[in-house]
Length: 523
Picture 1: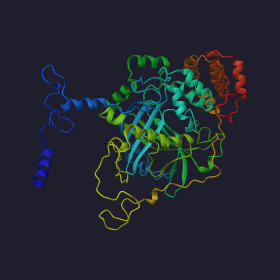
Picture 2: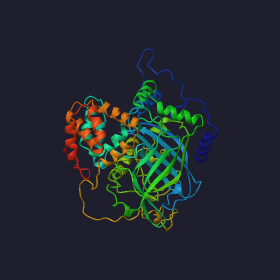
Picture 3: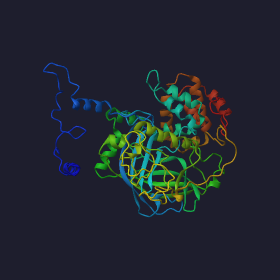
Picture 4: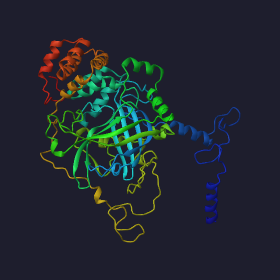
């Protein structure tokens, strides 16, 4: 009887009886998908109508928790092709010239919710998942090269200030500018965001940046500190505020439609991956801390720059939910040859991003097809919601002394010594203190002066449009003082645009120390 049952099951798989028929989730055919089963013509609906119950229950659960940040997103598959083996790292994508690695890129807006107009002013997420033969590597960054804060301790507060008022559910400039008035290191990012770079013309026409410093490790265990940059080969193009407003008035999905239309016509967008390189002994040789996420590596003599390869996006996902929505990115998804730096913001993201995905998708999130690595997974993790796979051994602990057949051996799934993390020298004591060499305003001034006259005018107009909505004069004055400390012309123009006393702006700016500003204290 057992043999007959197995044979029958195999036969059903080979020649399905209901190949073109609507079925329930258990594979059984649906006899009526139009009417509920009732007790007589006018009677109530019966609980025994399992198809109805299942259909409604599944519908009730179609939405998973929305990402707190990066909720509004669009994804595409593609390929990364290496320009040649790098002597800086043993990381799998860069081992040989011409080596190809499948990638998934998820573009997004940071603050605004799912379904919001894509052209709203916001940093744009640029997250890339490399499906390498040594595991998945997630390079999770933004289109802008810096961030608002340098320490993960401030991240929940920053996001709370940018999100809608918890009483009214309306986003308010008074709330986030109040936060930024107490966060002087945000001046650099605000200068980027309120330029027209804050409203790119398309996902195809913007750069991507890892933002944080990472460590590359070579075959001898030598470390280089690097920053990753995606350079668009379509050229950078932005929208003015007026153009962005016009676009979102007619198309909430402006960027998605642009990207998918380009791919459909085989105009495949591409980017080159470039790194800036510092040696460990260079980290203390600058006026700023190179591991500070509010800083760019600018004006560094003889800074080494290496082009690692080219990425091309050429495939639209078949399902938005299964790919774009269920994709799980985290900077903790690293592979041998790439390690995190001591960047304080990155250190917090290593936990927070992965934990967010465990909350949204469950502890087995990385078993979903879009997140599953192409490399085999050998793990002693077990159980949990939506666990996939087949258990083939009773050994679910390590170390062990078996070889998989029950005989004594090396141990099932033993460690790989080559994957050990590098050692990092440490000194000092535990502490809770702001970093040295903050240099909060210098690069913001350099960015302002790098803009053309027209770009500066757009920056002031965009910036003041939000800032002048703040009724608190002290907040407007403090923000203007930050920009004055970055560049006097910048501060004067913004102060005039938001109608604050320039003398007070100058007085506050004069007391700002660009080497060390105590967080949370207004001068």
